[in-house]
Image 1 (tube, one colour):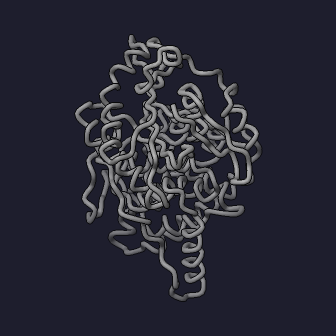
Image 2 (cartoon, one colour):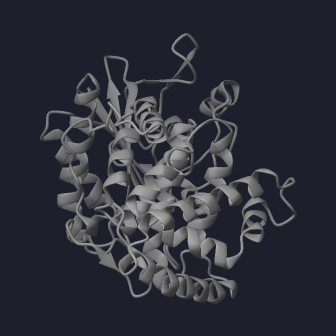
Image 3 (cartoon, helix red, strand yellow):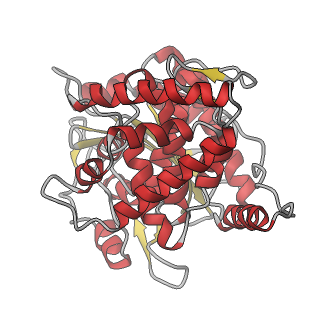
Length: 423
């Protein structure tokens, strides 16, 4: 197979060469920053030496009937996105990552996903971009859909290297690149509580909604509610920032302990207003960033029961702060969850696209600074929020496991309890 080169740091630092399917499989967590689970991953290759470029990840659609259109749109997204960034890919590497179900073997997973691998290869090839390698990773082993040589790719699969022992692991450690665990573990930090405390949090959200909705819809106190929401969020950020090191249960459990059900409910419902959310997005750098990120993650976990879609706003804010502070893997996970809840949430769409296309978040930071400065001085800002960098190819909601049908863009949603007006 062709050799592929991956930079492990800045352009002036050394590069490593991956020479085999085994080295490609071992490199995948370092390319993404986490171990993907239940995922299609596609990586663009550029130039004669196969330099790694854009990366794209999507949950594997459950229904095989969805595979053909998803394959076409994934290929189009990656190739057109690479062209917008400067060059058309010379080739693509595909990874299908899925653990065996109960009673299933890794080889059976590989055979079951073979039609999807073929659809992806055909979709890329029809756009004159070949798939150089397609690997299935399952149950601690990998298989190649492209390599016929049983000496390197036997029918029973090849075991993955022990974590931390591959050439990519050594180079990544030297460069300070971190793997943040599995995708499932990263998503679990942001998902709703499933503990007995969830019932108490749901009741607090009920009570907060009953008090908040009349104030906004009847009394017209939207601006006052925004001020109160942001003031309380500031109090919670200060409390989180001043908290001691995490206790034995871990940092997330400690953050949850520091925020009451009533406080969480009040801020969650307040953030459903778009303007309030946008003002909260200004806490994206400096000493504000870390406590803000902890707060948005904690609030995402508090969106329980019928309020699960209310997590879209704090998830999007968590993704924005993570991207703004240089943690692109965590940003993609948070924004992906936000879009799983609401595929039409515009702020999450634009951030997810920009993050995936490798844009600099400084452009958006400048816009938010200008908005804040104009609000403080009473002047109209000269700059406006950034537009999407190009035409976006949306994947169908059905392609994302667990995604509900898309909501009508123009409607203002009033949930069973509380309001949601922000996009």
